[in-house]
Structure formats: structure tokens, C-alpha cells
Amino acid sequence: MATKSRTRSKTRLSRALGIPLTPKAAKYLEKRPYAPGEHGRTKRKQDSDYAVRLREKQRLRAQYGIREKQLKIAFEEARKAKGLTGENLVELLEMRLDALVLRSGFARTTAQARQMVVHRHILVDGQLVDRPSFRVKPGQTIHVKTRSEGTEPFQVAAAGGHIDLLPKTPGYLSVELDKLQARLERRPKRAEVPVTCEVQLVVEYYAAR
Image 1 (cartoon, helix red, strand yellow):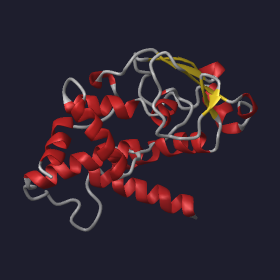
Image 2 (tube, helix red, strand yellow):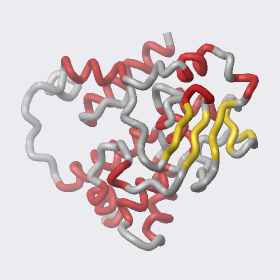
Image 3 (cartoon, one colour):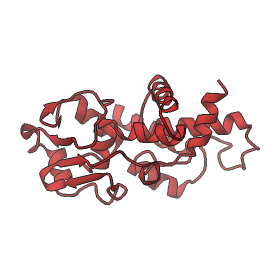
């Protein structure tokens, strides 16, 4: 029952933000490409600048499935780094362990990727890591614990069960799916990261606070 209501809330959030957050939500959005609620089909009145920026920030947060506090911490780090803050922000978020478990095709959704990490199925360079927010460094290898490889979710992944549901493997990752192993070759570049977001609007949202 809890899974059904979680799926429903993800679908509802996907419709509100206009982006598919799960494969199931993607199918639903094709059928009903408008916001939820009785006024969903009517044309939105012109949103204020604040509302537009807020929605963009919520979109970014939802795609990584993180809390506001985590996004704010990442933003502050991105702001202090060299280069464009918005691009830095996405690149930092993309190096999270749960994000890379998803991009590698080991999981079909962000939530499942996080669960795999929390339930201690994932190793980084041979060391068990159970923090989804752990930042993987270029050159590090992510792989599934030997004892977990035979379980159904990982057998499905190793057989390429999620390939059609996920974006193409980005260039910063090299993946050996049959071995349930992936390596972060280099820092991701914003243009390659399969995330829908006008990052400048997120920067403006935080700059105005």
C-alpha cells in the first residue's frame, strides 16, 4: 500500500514539475501532460519570477531526490568554486554515489539507487559505503558487493533490464553492466548530465534569498 501511495505522489510531483521522476511517471505524463488538480488543464496564469525560479529549484531537488538543506550546502560549495555556479552545482550533485548508481544502470529510479546504497550493497574502490551523498572522485570504481550480485534487483540490472528506461550512459562513466561495475572517469560536465533544469534560475533563486 505504501509503495502505491509513493508511486502516486511521485507521479503527482512529476506532473506538477513537468518532468518524469520515474519510468511510471514518464508514461503517465505522456497521457496527461498537465499539472494535477482541477485547474491542471487550464492555462497557467503568468507565473511570477519567484514562482518560476522556485519551480526550477524544486525540479532540480526532485531529480536528485535530496532535501532542501542538502541542495543549499551543495549550492554554497558551487558558489565558492571557480566557474559558473549553476554548472558547478549540477556537476557536484552528479558525483553523489546514488546518482552514479542510477546512471550506471544498477537501479531504475533515484529512490531505488539510494536504497541500494543505504542497505549496504555498494562498494567504492572495494570499501563499503552506505551514504547516498558520498561524493565519488574521478578514477574511483563503484561496484556491487559480491554477496548482493545474485539478488533479483541486481540480476535484472546486470541483464540490462533498465537500459531502455534510463538515458544513455554519459561520457564521464565507463560501465561494465554484466560485472555490475562502473568507473567515474572524470568530473561530469553540465552539458552531459541528463537532468532537466535551467540552472541559472536556481542560482537566481538562492541569490535573492
